[in-house]
Image (cartoon, rainbow, N blue to C red; front, side, top):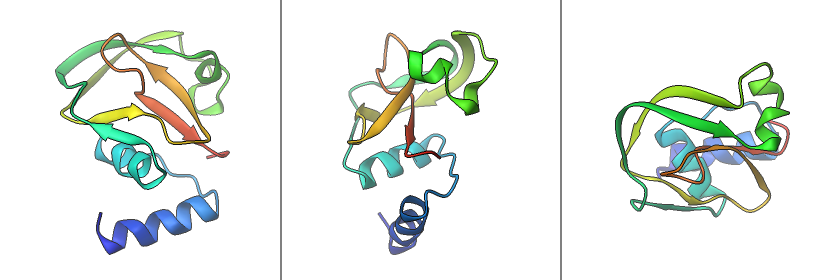
Length: 105
């Protein structure tokens, strides 16, 4: 991770600043916080169904969403295990950590 990314995450995490990390952003943040990022769960680019966890269904970011939603995604790397003290919000059959929350933001 570059010095810029480390400094950015130092500020974002310490101040619980709202940050939506999509694609490599979630992998970089997950790795920064001690999660495991690997190539074990690749998914080809395309439409897939994801499921919100019970925490995801009650999360303000996902308020009003159906418990199962169809999204466009694709990745070579993903979080194999979520960062400590994070909350998993969404998953699918191919990957157990598609979205997670850290602190309040």
